[in-house]
Length: 400
Image (cartoon, rainbow, N blue to C red):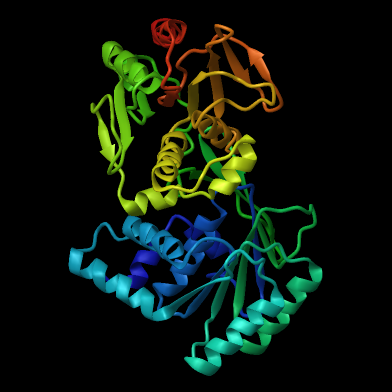
């Protein structure tokens, strides 16, 4: 199968067709989204489309390592390349490596001057002249976008910028926005040159592939239609798994090398590449949860695993304790923050108050949840009390 045919299989074909095949030289496209909503995955797909056609791409990342960016490309390629034989997939990876260069700014914010400097160096030293440049981690203002456009026209380059916006201004020839919904991400075109905008696209929040409109919020009619995602750890996660088994629900327990599970039913070992998809700065987590987390492999992998649990679910149920600042105690708090960032339906059972609370977007309000989605995340504290165990069993018992 020609590699260009793989590109035709991609989920973004309708959008690329609306763009006449993609950005033109001298054009600047901007992808806007909140943290963790998939903006990097989106620009990677645009870049992969060019690479599979044999066009040169420069990827400039404001955060993360070269290996992490490369893993992102390979993950998307694995999804598109399922029909390929193992040898063909290896050849596809090599083909892409030959047409792509990844540059990281090591935490420094990219800008037009830095982009031009990198392009100058690559042209002079290795004679690498891309037709597409991805700049991940920069929101250009009007002057920055104009500088990129001038640079692109002079050198035959199109630019995609991915950013978490701090401004409401729409800057760029093409502006796309990712909006997290309950169980998916909606891709909205805010500006595409002149003419009609394509309709919003529903994308899977975890894999960032197109999803059907009728599978997002279907309510289950029996426990057998429910899948419970967790880590299978002792305490709340094990209790969710036990309840799932008793009531006939399916169970997926994410694990990784060195992780001890109390439950192995439905165990799903995560590869290093899959773990990397949920990678996150512990400094960011510390700021978000207002507590300190030291750098270390084990805690990082736990957080990566939680990313998979939450991203796979439509509704998140957590057992723990809500603090005065609105966060939830322990590492479980990261599950809560991910759910809030992605606008997923979220319930927390506070063991101290013996009450379920629902996040309404601004505050915690008391309520009584049911299992009203086919994919749920059940997680929480290792220190499960009897009230917490009863709360989990009650959740399943009253739902069907």
